[in-house]
Image (cartoon, rainbow, N blue to C red):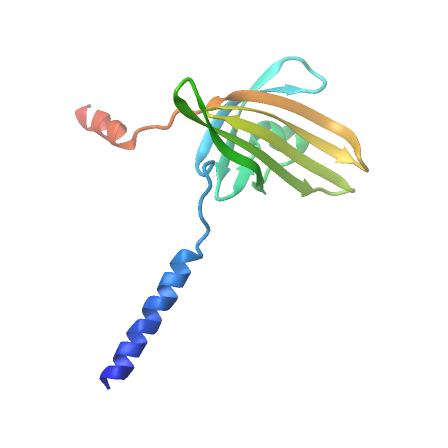
Length: 157
């Protein structure tokens, strides 16, 4: 009887340990938002927008949704993920690539480089290898709100 209970407990512990070990590790872009200025390929005027990363997917902002028709989260891959030291400060350098197929043989491509808290990159739609629409962007990471600080401020009022 004791052996059965012990073996069942051991099996449960092993299975739960394996399940925990194989959960998807979050990358350094997880839950990061960037405020960017987008320059449409046709118009030199900068358009303010936001780019968000979460759970291995990127949301390319309202510009991509309204102007390019990309209103969903797109799975991305990290082309390069490294750290370097500049002036005694450790900084991160991340290159990202996200592509998805659209209707009518079109492909949307999102490329960016995150250098510490700054981001720059491009979005484009190609059809049969030729650029159809493109835009470039650059910006900085959006400061995170301190939930504890916000809560204290609300209580004080």
